[in-house]
Length: 280
Length: 278
Image 1: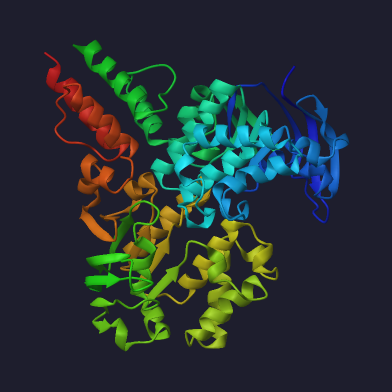
Image 2: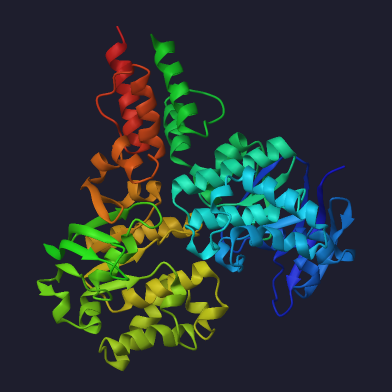
């Protein structure tokens, strides 16, 4: 059974005339890294809010359709129950971190779940190690760099062992090395732990290489979904091309290269080596 | 023409831990300078010196020949417009329209002109439909555009944009790139603080890389952004095209140069094929 199942979901925020979601259907399985893209205001953040039940439980409005996450019917399941299955990470980790040490920050959600002390200790130790945060465990989150803070935010969400990780522009304020670190960490969680990650991100040049699926939204609808190497070509009108795809297109238009575009500099250079070899 | 000259600028917030460690840098009119480096490299601290929000502890900053120690922030702001990374640091009016009108009044623009200018910039930045709304009811991306519109409304000679593309979608990023190019063509000096290497590759004429409170490399964008060593020292990543070209060189492909943009790489490949043809 799909971990996330949305069927013809509509949602209109109270006080707004337009629907933010206009018939969204999406199925996603464990282990997928779904890159969710589209212009500002297309409904991406609204879709994430449906996954953890903020819609329809917290945001008032008109909700229609079917939303099931980890087998739970979202409109009928209280948000604190959904929170154990769906972890949310936002653009600005400062809004999520408020305790005096990294270790306490990570333990906080577990204490709230009422887990036994020994279990809390085990999980805190495990995520500190997984995220390479052992040395920072006694530091205050506000002393850390933006990249480190975002790691702590993800670590404290992952300590709850959610099966779905919903991330709303988690790297927007990070330098490229920190951003790549965060995204490859998320990719590892999907491969090694079967987590389903649904990640909103504008910078395709950073995120596309990690995606197992690319989903494009526009005007409250999903307009393309599937293999990133195919969808990246279909969606350029809405999200542009990363430079490696532009270079590939130029060579393709000249008839030198065929097939699906590369998503990384490494893959582009391989294709170019092929072109040069082929001509000689 | 030299608009801003920073000479051996030293700065520290607490008097102990140096944040700027002897920065020398020139900002010229008619040119886009990208100031790059990882989070915490000192970029924002440096540009705050350009409008006198911070004053050097040692060294000096000249804005159109005036030492920033001898001018008020209000005087400097007329020549140098600053758009902060977080728009909430500069928005405070009750409505979107009032935000822009306030800035114009503050800069001494007469009311009848201010009205027309305000209408024009709100249209240009796709904010006219929000004119009566509170800035805080807008999305982060929209608030960023409003901060930009407000500063551009009074037409300063130099624009400093701190992380203008962070969190912006493809359409707005392209719009910001066009805007930056347009400002340059009108002879403005533009400083873009950014760690978006692809955006810098697109818009910058010159790049200054900062690390540990120093400028570690400065020069034409086409030279600095392909310099793998300097980019690594600033904890950035090569843009995609130079990264691909560098791999080709490692694999023994004889490129005449490392290109910065897709068109350049395409030209290199074509040249190789033509050269290699019988």
